[in-house]
Image (cartoon, rainbow over all chains, first blue to last red; front, side):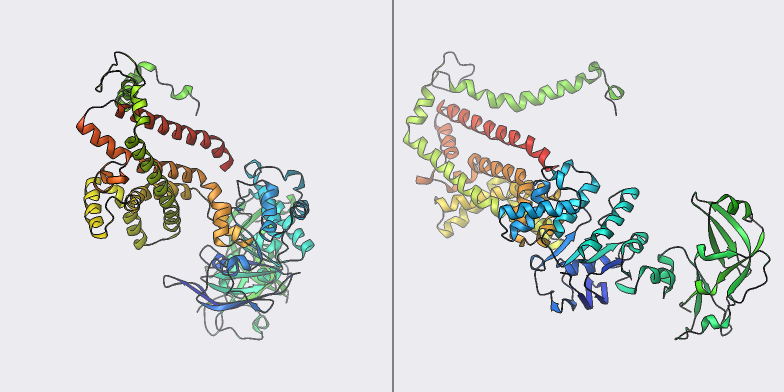
Length: 354
Length: 270
């Protein structure tokens, strides 16, 4: 039903510029994996290599252990949802969904039954005689998904399928696609540049930059345990504060925070705004890393309020709070001194370039 | 964007009306003056006609020489269209896919037959055909006309492909269609208007062509336009006006059919 994908040392250059640089990635059957990265990071190129529209210069891609790079795109049996949906405007909704079955020589009655079924899965069965130009963006999205799954491919590829929708619909569709994935159990490779989308939907997220995979991990680990400054800064807000070791400038942290399996030459502390606490006069706690600072700016953002704090050594971090009345009342004003803290469990240490 | 906001009084636009009228007069009158002339009972081309007759149409349909030339023109135009449209569609597709300086050059070469003065092309074709023994042959005329038609096909179909979302063809391929099948099932139905336009342009281009025909389409393969040109030189025979009128009606009908096809097609394409 679902297939595994093994990407091994894929490299691709476009006119001497590396688009993919020795990319390896294993995707287990039934997994929802998201390739996340800024534009130009190679995520779409990698997806196109799997789909068969880009031929890599080197490497191999195995599906259930079989090489697919030697197969043309139409023999790979992958369902794909495109950014523009790529529905066929000269066919009805039903004809669009039945098209892959027609190509496979499925009989007319069977074609109609299965197309109806696939449209039912995305709650579009009532609209099978509509023309594509009569559909809204969200409906097109659903039809494109139905068309990509109707022939029961073991793998579904999705190239920023929600980017054309407005924010509210996009968020609804994220949940809907996540449920469809759980229900259908197919392997999904999903490309997006929207980190929140990636965290919401995926089993694993592969963060890419400049043709390389920087980190592959569960959404929670990608956010809480980034392994590089790029990942820490690309996902969510983060202050990356160099730690004073070996005579280097930086903040001071309890030495046990640096006891890890590997010693980092230039360690830095990743501080997420929502994990920072305000310590009002409490005695220092052994599990809290404390900082003295001064409020530089307070920004009200509706659901949250953001406070920028300047540390004595010139670095800064921010803290975020929900806008409950009691919180707003107790927040310090600009220019005030305060002491903030980060619990050891919320601290993440990464290595940065010295 | 209401109309009232940009309304200009008619008096301010008088110059536009005058300009458009001049354009109409110079474009259309020469074409439609021919039709009354073809019904004139005078032995020479005359306008306005003093009395009306169908004699010149009878002469045309009764003359083996004229009918043979008309048949030649129709078959040359048909075969030239059958060659230039597939070749031109293929070329337009390739040029649309490809990037790079080589393809800019290639595109230029494909358009060249319509860029150079046709007399030069005709002289070149004539000397080449003498070497190849193709002068006054059906194949020779068809090849020369196809070369003239291909630029039109490349331009019209190329314009059609520009507005086509390439992702649709890729989508068809992921769904299991080979490249050719994807092109046929998905691309062709959506650029069909440009292809129909290319067919009409090609046919008319070949059918209307005079200059190359004068050089290399003689003998039993004489084309209608060549015969008209020669007879115009010898005597100002109203038969020519009759033939011209028939051609005008055919052309207008072809364009009318195209425009009629275009309306529902445009909506479906959106």
